[in-house]
Amino acid sequence: MRIIALLLALCLFTACSDNKIIDGRVYETYGFLNEDEVKAPNVRYRLVAGNLVWSILLGETIIAPVYFIGFDLFEPVELADCDRYYAKECVK
Image 1 (cartoon, rainbow, N blue to C red):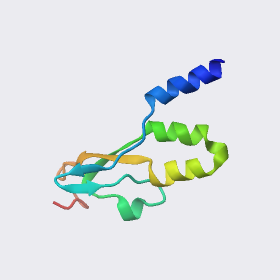
Image 2: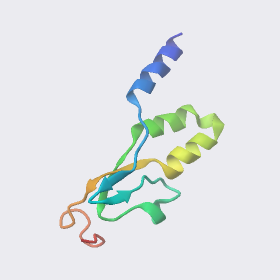
Image 3: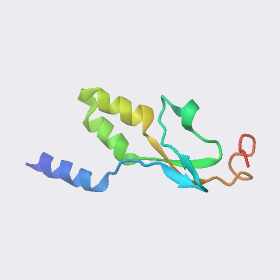
């Protein structure tokens, strides 16, 4: 019974990542498998802890962890300060 209560509590605090529109352009979520194709150098991303938790909980399914970690682990937050963070690779 405690395990079910713990899983329900985790469900309340976890959320899926989401694409974000910044300055009229859609920035997509990315993971380790599509980082080269999707990640924008001028956008700051954050780790989605909920997707990491779900990939651990659903590890036996194999499909869920591949999706969450491979394609949906980081979500765009905001445009990065080019002068401060990504001076070499930032595109203004």
